[in-house]
Image 1 (spheres, rainbow, N blue to C red):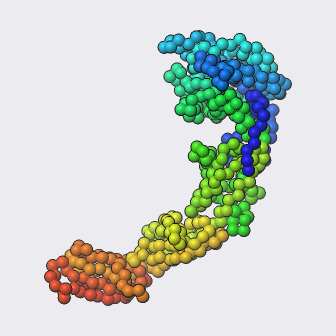
Image 2 (image 1 turned 180 degrees about the horizontal axis):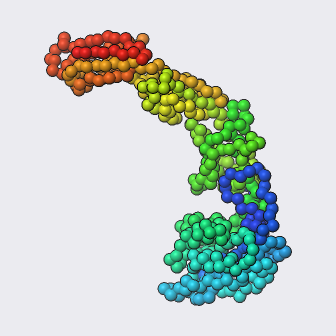
Image 3 (image 1 turned 30 degrees about the vertical axis):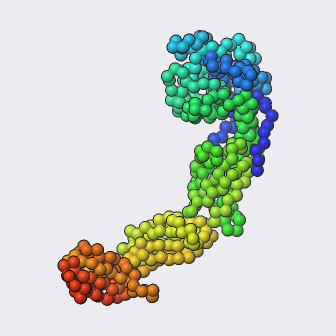
Length: 471
């Protein structure tokens, strides 16, 4: 799937986007929301600071932005339930270093219906010359909306080429406006903004970057794809038969270039057993990570704009059930190591005894940290199958040597004696939970000076049984 471009249409796509359907990249139902008749009020907050006089590919930023906004207003004439307004900052006082006017923000055109031509006329009169009081302009916007009447959706569209210049906090103001229900999350278009400053707007609102004049058109293309045609996707998690029935798994959709996760959620099937719809920006390339055990990663996912995309990922799962011999088992505190079988043998998870855990379909080795360790190899976890794995309840060895010494406990196996507990010069007296089998204990007291003084004991230990050695 490849992204496509739309011709440059001015600010109309962005405004259509605001009017008829911003959807953040979170989970949504399959059906599109129904249109409403509520009034949408858009307040343009326009940067007329001195920096807008800088040249931007042979033309001043001020001229490009002003002409684009003015041209787009023609397309908005006659739109029902739409009210527009214009607030400008930096136009009233000429910028003098060290003497900036942070009150230089003005509601040039009050919000109301049929303001298109008035805004166009006022744009022609403005002059870019002052500073950049973004926070104060956003704060004043609350009064601008308060002067209107009746319920509706209030939207701020900030067009700027610079960051806050008056030591105030646009992020805090934006959060307060949203928390009080005065506005929805603002939209910001950055015009030729230096890269190190772009991140400062992430907390203010939905930031769209126009790094060069044609980038303005790119921003609007993105908005068209997201709003008018609603580029969307669903993630189909396939079982071993290729059926999209897997679900209830955490997953992430990550922008590949930035590494930023745009969606972090739990996969859900709706009431019709269909994966929920995700509304996404069609321009970036994505990686999708499904957090199975081990995780599944689908790389380099591209979306086709203006349609509903299907992202299919093979993620068949089954369950490993580590049952306990009895509720009071001494095994209940064990954390069992589950690894991939074969050459990889990397650890997938540490699963507690007595639990049931979901894994990606495959073959695993299961290692129980008992004395001695028990390794169950080649456990095949299949599609939706529950595989029970259990081991014998240990027996109890009570050992009392009454002295420090050397030696160890060994398990008799077909391959020979396997060291289970080494004695390294300390007193090994104590209780040992050992797996059933035949054991040999070899011990020489530290104070004993000859090999002949070594002591050997052979004993059988059954599951749940007990054996005592007194030396």
